[in-house]
Length: 357
Image 1 (tube, rainbow, N blue to C red):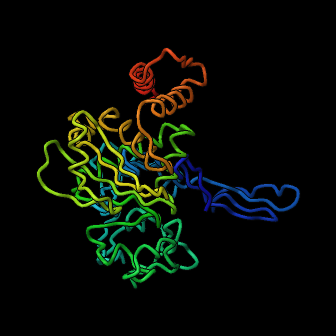
Image 2: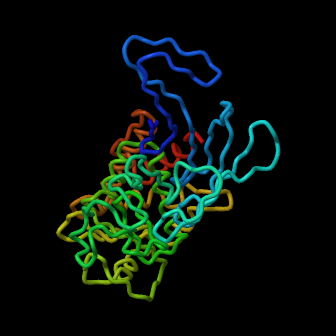
Image 3: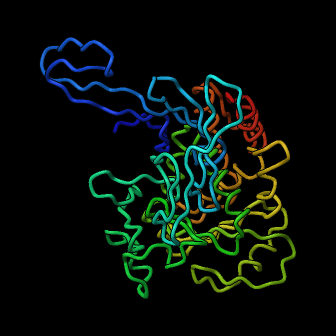
């Protein structure tokens, strides 16, 4: 298979390829193609995908055996595994029909499959056709064993666990879809969903500066713990990087902050990141995803977390926002020394508001 990929490896189009050295038929009823000089590969599309605020593919277009393209909508569970795929026939206004339906064992092995075989299934991943292992990007996964086939590159941080484990043997609550991850602490499923939607939105802007920060934050050399707290919190959440004071103590010292990053004094891209609970909950409204709810706050805190130095004040904010706004407008925005952080942030928000839908 061949893929047309986006900036975050989104599969916008999927193609099958046929290698040939002679004439070959396009279909059973078609005339053979004329042989070009030498060998060649004939590519033909089998799937076009669209993406929403999240990273899953809710809508696909696939051809039937007659070459007619039909719409397919997927219904996912809380882990992002495909449960049902609905088909809309291109020729009729009839209600959709169920094209495929899935149930899974806890570690992802398909338990019941009805209808057509879907290219992707458990946590929206596809299997390698030769090894029949789940292709999770960094590592291959065996859903029968519930184990990765390669050692975790972060295994030295989890001495009590086998380096082949998947989600610490808790696949119902957690997922590991690329072998690397940010660590979510004291966050419920709705908050994690909102955080990931903001990450996906930031990737979708195709800003080199933004993409570099996010890939660094999600990479193998970082250890970033994401927390969400409200105001005047009375509970005590211990730091994940062994700072002496609780997160609430540090958080309540900054009553106006939308986010806060507490770095390991030794650097090493270890950090506790706190996102204001109210801002994160504003990520979704009755009209859908709100790109201004927490996206710039999250980006700013991950920028702090991935720098091997403590960053305070507004200079680093202005530098980052200046880069972003110039990438969004094609390098024509003049960030003079007189421009304040709020002014530049306002320009970034204006450009985001006018991004193509």
